[in-house]
Figure: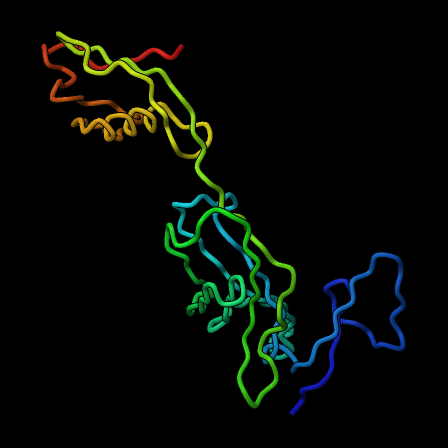
Length: 219
């Protein structure tokens, strides 16, 4: 076939090894393969940008190349790419959309190296192997907040909350965390004006038929 040695200079196809000249800091890649799309150079995107231990992690593998038949540059999803995390600790395969998922909690906190490949015995590599890719999974942070909840006739809650989660949590996140830890019933609705606290422990906004409702103060 048309397989053979190819190269890129600074992520661009070269003019020829006898024609291109190099300067300080250039990046030079030689690889064995075919003309695109038979061998592609992958672009890998990992989301979310900041990963915590309860996140679903999405890998997306695409490739952008010049399609000579269409005479234009095109971007395609890469199906069947293998994503090898930490030398076999976890191996994923991309779907038709070029995506592969890590389920929440599958990886503990830490930094993970990974490589993306697509190879088939008896043929040139279908992807140029990646090098030096990594991502970080972060541990939850703990913040302590004093929380007091005064109900209609009694104090419902009055203690320090040790919230574990992402940094800078919202009031709603800390409140729901505390109430669930305490095993208390509550209802928060999501309306046109944002989140609304409907009830805590059976005490419901509008109990007395007017504009009475759950309110809060911060600091």
